[in-house]
Length: 506
Image (cartoon, rainbow, N blue to C red; front, side):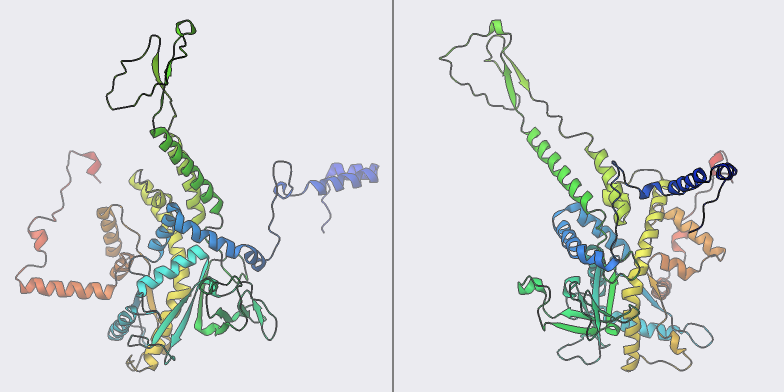
């Protein structure tokens, strides 16, 4: 530890009284600390002292089960998941544009179309249960990733006993939920197994131990039943997980930091809803008047008055009047409080506040700023999904297609570029299409971006778009229509600027 630096006064005190000098140096060292690291009466100073895997082992399964319960029973939690899945994967899934290259670096368009044709056929039936197409499978994998914190997928290729791939390319995937990889399965012989994952000395996964039967389906409470697990090599298993620490083997739900807030908001909304429902059952009372006007009559019977729309009370006794109970419901501050909680949930879970609250107020600049910041988060999550799920599956698909002879690779193609592709997550929507289109057109005219890149940013495939446009132009010419018929008809003519309007001047 470095010795504390002494000031001039410290040195003078130490020269006159060494003991006092030592005390001053010690006091200065004690005061050199972070205030946040010292708990006090008002600050608990809670700390996480365990390893990443130990903390996940303690809470991972509970967080996963709680997140599933909220998805099933709380509309807001379901909306957050739907928003994340819609913006990370989208309605048609992650788009792929094959880009195999020749030795000179140019893209072989014919080979790219050949790969794309086989890929479209495989996307119709990609998984072993044959219940989902590729877009639906991606949404399920993505939803499990966010809700459970992780998801697994086994890649099966070639001849597999009892499995009919159902596509031209013999490749299928098996989607596996986190429950089937037991988190409490650990061992050290003959191989090191940590939370169901077999690792080597460097901590890299070499295999996964998967239950043959789900513990939820079998009705047992034990996570591991002797002899009912199978080992899947790491080369055939994909593992998408939400991690925050180095060497963390299992993932944690994205709801982990907002589960308590979800519960509090759900209870508060339910209380306010019950209070408003009770307030809607209007009640009234009869005020008897001043005591000197009240003359009790023991023989008087209990009176019952029924409310009817537009009724008139004409049988009140002298001094009586009708009063109603003011419940102050619905609570006018409910929306403000709820919006504050939703902003905190949006910050913790990932989606934008406007998307989960369904509130789209503000100017164009404010809305676009929120959209840009939100899509930076969506793009990060989409890149994680592509890197752990989509890209490995596509690369395996191209390899199997080539080995099986379905993909005819011409001479001159660089072997390492055969599985090159551009991956296209959902495009950021345009708030004002006219402004956005003009901006992208200007960028293309100045060669800041290419035309295919603009199409990709819109979520399209440049090859398909150009083919569709070419076919459309041929059909228009066959019908005798000019290429710019819309503009010649006057429907797309720009409005000239008004010289008298200073806002339209350069």
